Image (cartoon, rainbow, N blue to C red; front, side, top):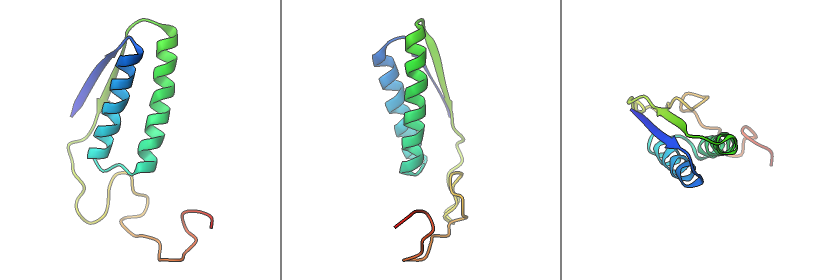
Amino acid sequence: MMRTWQISSVTDAARARIATARIAAAYGVPSLERTRLAVSLSGRLRQCLTKGGTWRLTLEADAAAPTGDGWTPWSRRRGRRAPPGSRRGGRR
């Protein structure tokens, strides 16, 4: 799937950022990665708006869905979760 937006105003940038976040959610991207995407994209769009003119944002996503075994393109461990009470994945 490919989606393209013309960005020339703050409203255009907001619509593109929201649509990108929704597409990422629909593809099963974890919330932390979606947040990182939104922050990064917002910063880049802000730079484009500061420079002025019309900019083009193109989002390309593979049509492949997760296989059902817990693996997604964003997982670092193939579907394995840390056991309850373990210290992997953060501080306590």
